[in-house]
Length: 383
Image (cartoon, rainbow, N blue to C red):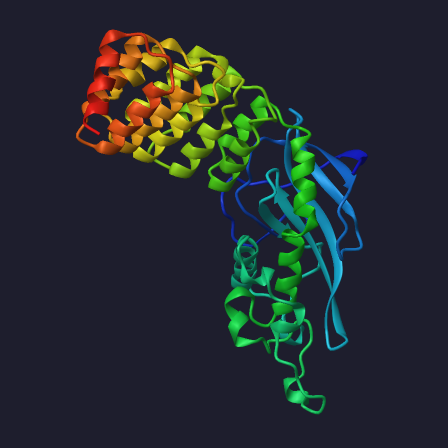
């Protein structure tokens, strides 16, 4: 994939959902919420690396003056056919910088049509856009032939083509009625190989500030995409670190989990980050507490203050979290006397699972403390 040219583009990228409108050029346009809302500046044209059924292989990238990819579009010109009857579909499809469906517009004078070439109503354009916005649509697993019942050669009344209303009942929920094949074709272009091309192009432009811009998106999938493209893609700046920590809350588990994941082992060299995660541990729910303990296993070295805090917590945590902390200590080969004495106190815990795990921990290291040896001897005697 490579850039062909750079040119100016004036495009209506909006920050909220719109009904079908006619823009200043007389084109029907329907756009959803973009991932970032900076002012469009330039457009780059690329040859799509992936091949699909669309003849035009040019993928356009809309950039802001900061150089951030804001959106992508393709000029789709393809036949929508059934029973050797075709209608040419002319539509421009748009993606966000994260590959999410953004919308479509039609060249001046063009319109989407259904049975008997009747133009779409505004409600049908809106429905089309809603259907295209569903990445989990059953259209993904349907074949072209399954969209409508096969008409008998002599049954002219039920004869169907690409814009017919004779749609199979089980797929009516997922298509614009009377335009099943148009819906199917457009959906498969949106979620086909172009989406992969968009992701590859955006990845080439990733930076901490660009990630922060995407994290401001009101769309959850954009935020998740950004969080998945931090670790191994961009350096963790103070601003990005603050944003990640801000997402670790009980408000949204999916965002919190991805934010925790985004910290790399290299990031965890910082005692500041480790202590910040400890602070989050204090206010987190049970599920997030487990994730934070697991994340700290990736640290090259466990911070002394963090280790002491978890040691002090051993007497108050529940069974699973005690087990998780002991696994954390084992990963970091914690064997200082103060920590081991606290672990030794667990040998008298009423929960046998805790006592057994504490003994296994102490038995696997060299213990030279008289008090610890006494606790271990008493534990053995009870067996």
